[in-house]
Image (cartoon, rainbow, N blue to C red; front, side, top):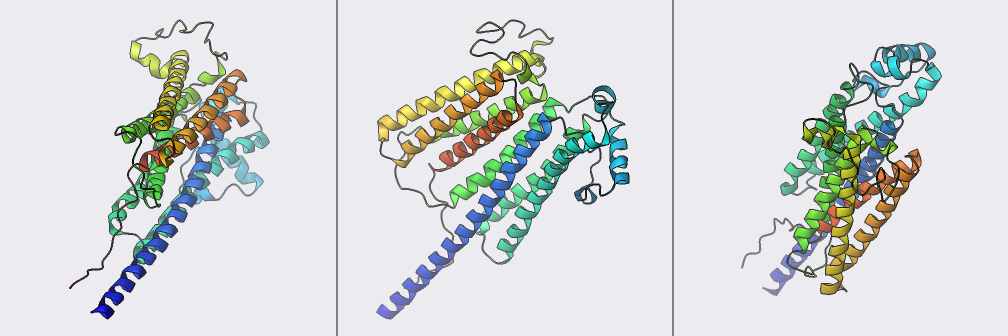
Length: 367
């Protein structure tokens, strides 16, 4: 009987070790996906800030991987660009050499997007076929892959909005594209965190998990508002702080009719709401930190609340600096990077209240 129990114990330990190795491998894979997603969002931001997003006027998922390789191919690509309003209205004096500078941003953005599909899809297939992914994760991870494919279609839907009647892309579609990217980022972060070891410390209060979820949602909403600001070039005007256009609450916020449209198409209103969102997020994160430190100062949850507050503080400084300096490319990209870091940490912090995902095991111990 003792020998049987010893054998069973060995089998259990071996299975636990195997699951540990598999979960570690999946975490490393998801971390790599997150890094490439982070780079993709930053290159996408640079593409928008340099007005490069309309430089490639066709969607060629396979052939589009290969850029122009000679002078004639560059001229052909440039001739396609000449057909759209952005060239005809804004860039009619542009040369082929100048066109190359905006082409490479968009090409790099699309290449990274394709790379994400490979980095996510092939390892996922390998992990599933070799039994390294627990069955309960198959559907969620497949869902992330499908959402990534949909994101490619959303990207082209966004670009197409600027090819006929506009000189830039629709701010509505830009915001949809960015938010979808953030949802993919959040899902990868959520499952990476779910497969990580957790402390067994209780939350500071019974509302801590809900507050963490609220913070994550507010961070995502701020990113959405930031996309509207970028889409309308709203950051290039009203470059003062803390006052805006000389007032705490500027005039002409509802200058357009119907009133609701100002929240999406009036640059002044969009920037003002983005400021209010930043103030609200800062206040909630500060309150969360104070509550956590008072209720459970020595816990991991409290330490995370401090880190989150510091990240939001740095992001606020970057946002104000970007505004005051009239949106220089480097600061604007740092601000976008900060937004994604805050959001990613908020998601990880939220998931931290639910503990490690329960393990799957096929071991059955019989008397």
